[in-house]
Amino acid sequence: MLWRFAPMIYGPTVLFGLGEGALLPLLPVIAESLGASLAQAALLASVIVVARLIGNLPAGWLVARIGERYTMAVAGGLALAGAFGVIFSDGLIGLAVSVFAIGLCASAFGLARHAFMTTRVPLRYRARALSVLGGSFRLGMFTGPFVAAGVLAVWGEERAVAWFFVGALVALVVLVLTGRDPEDVLAAEGSAPRHPAASAEAREGVFRSMWRHRRVLATLGVSTAALSAMRQARVYLLPLWGVSLTLDAQTIALIVGVTGALEFALFYSSGQIMDRWGRLWACLPSMVLMGGAFLGLAFTHDLAASTMWFLVGAIVVGVGNGLSSGILMTLGADVAPPQDPAAFLGSWRMLADAGAASAPLIISAVTALASLPVACGVIGVIGLAGALGFGRTVPRYVPHHR
Image (cartoon, rainbow, N blue to C red; front, side, top):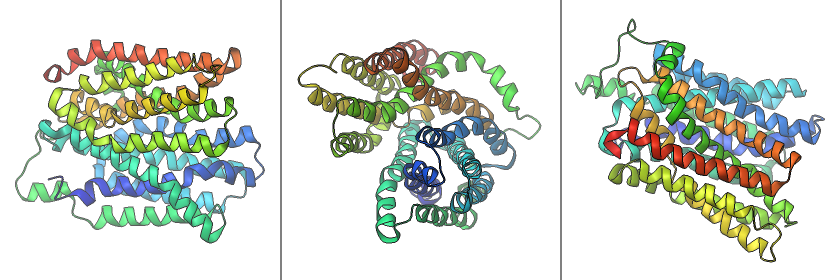
């Protein structure tokens, strides 16, 4: 099934990730061109994270009501409006609203495909399928900045990259609306989903689903939030660490680039591990590696070989994050109600995005109150605490993958 429908299953994710990955690094530059201060530019870049967090619950409701195909089409239209807003905004408020709309759509795209995989993909290769889905997004985000560099080299204007995002979104909407819909094709062939969908009357609302599954969300869900916090922390903490060591921008970019390459290279390994040996064998090593790397890095700042330890720590973080590809989606699919997963997955993804949104706030607050090494140590402790949480909750809620 995955080979037959690969363009429809993974294509929208690659296209959206490619466009978003090209645009995100230039948002602060566009904001500064409109008169934003450095602090305002940084705040604008975080708007998209907040929008993802807020958008998960309405996205869960929308997927449950109109299906994942039409949800992606609606989200594509809204994202197009946001992309045009980025191009034509002449003030910071308009730019912020446009970026917020793009963030809402990112939630809808992610949740729509997650819900489809939950109901359609057989359990024996679910983790690999979801790891490839995660890898598809990473591919877009990894190559997007290089595309942006090429666009800038040709046109020399930051907003030209937003036009590239428009092109990616148009291709995405056309693919979603005209491509073979896996749901329709499989239904015509008489291939029913593993778990028949619930009727419209039997579907739970988002908040009712959240209350019904509050125990798993408050336990396993909190551990996944810790994992999301670790992932987001590396985006902020590694460049800040390089700056604190007075490294030049080229060296910092090279070290962070090596980390990104490792993360992308290992995305399929995570799915193989989870399908063959169980979910715990991926999430525990991932959290221990990332948490241990950040905690150890906190004690190397003033050493003579601090740059070498920075490189070692970044590599370990990259390996740990690479092994975590698809974990959040796989665990969410494992514990979601099989007949009606969308509403639950909205809450699940909201928790994960809440963890991601909290990481830069924690780093900023602890650095201001103490120092960057202390902030690095706190992030490491959060990672190790998340590993303990996974060790206790994964065997309880995902018993067939101990």
